[in-house]
Amino acid sequence: LGFFLTGISTVLIGQILPILFNRLSLTDERAGYFFVAQFSGSVTGTLISGAFVRRVGFVGVLLIGFALTIVGVSALNSASYA
Image (tube, rainbow, N blue to C red; front, side):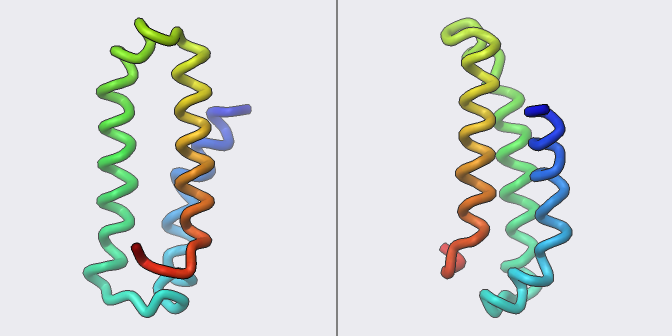
């Protein structure tokens, strides 16, 4: 279930980008940063997850990842670009 919801949130940015584009008055350049941020976060999380598995275990890493996903998706509802 967790991986299913994380997958949805990964694809979500492409679907809501037009809404964010209008609401935040974004230029094409600034809108493109959302994809860079999503990709960079995904790659960084993948690279550091191995170290975290040794420290907090597999379930702990999953919970941290899900919590960060919730924070990221919630931040999309922010009223400012920052």
